[in-house]
Image (tube, rainbow, N blue to C red; front, side, top):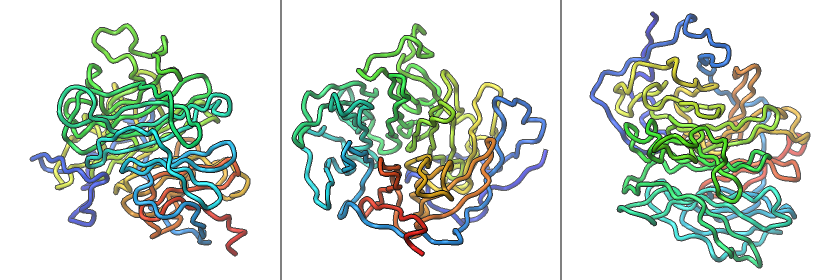
Length: 399
């Protein structure tokens, strides 16, 4: 079986997320052979081609200024923006003005934790519900873990707060809180929690939170058809497991599936198509290695694991995820956008028949791209650390 050495030397010494888990084993990656790729419903992915700069550079316009770490944002019915700052603030941006939103949660602002994603209820115009994920120190034990809440937005204040989910146990580790929120159009909410830096315990244990994708009804109750409902000791909100740190999530309306991107270690960032009850393998299988170059595992795939749609080597540290459906960017329509924290660009991915056919680096050097959304006006917006929220200008406006 052909063997290749992955990420020789010290070319990329950064981690995708900033943690530093290590092993004492020698690093060597075994490439899957053609005989490994026989399951048409679960194919072994091909390694992606190198990302390139586009022929025509996109320009941008700053819409929301002076934000340190804008973690998540969503659009109100009038097109204005609600955005979170990792440190704990929520802002409303409209017509160039910023107004603070009162009543947000108290956050455990530690390491990668803080105020995370924000998403409006699909029927927000009629009920004013806003959903938020954040790191919380509530519950037993020192430290914190990821929580999900909802509240009603009225007059720039969050009221009628309801706590929907709190991961357990708390941990003082600062890694891998997740977390994104999406809706499937059928009355369900999906959200993610990372493995909290406890890779050898949490992701593969259904009795524990962490390293999972969760599915709830919009009121926070557990759907009766969740895959682990009735299973002894399993947390019934879990929809899939074996994840590392998913920080991008979309509902792909074309396929009717939830897709996530998630941080790998050194190499091995993934895009996964989420299926009920499936195990995505971390850390038993991975295309990545430890940050010191040692091996996590020699296995890349296995019959009990769901393979990623695709993976990145080296890691780009993906955060934020969007599928472009707008006619304003005909060259991007139908394709995907992913924020690259590590290399500070917006990645454009063309995917055909489950294979990546193009990778482009948009907005190179602008900053760490934390989130990306298509607005109700059809324009693409991105949250950039140290800047705020910017609008991607169509090429016809930049020529």
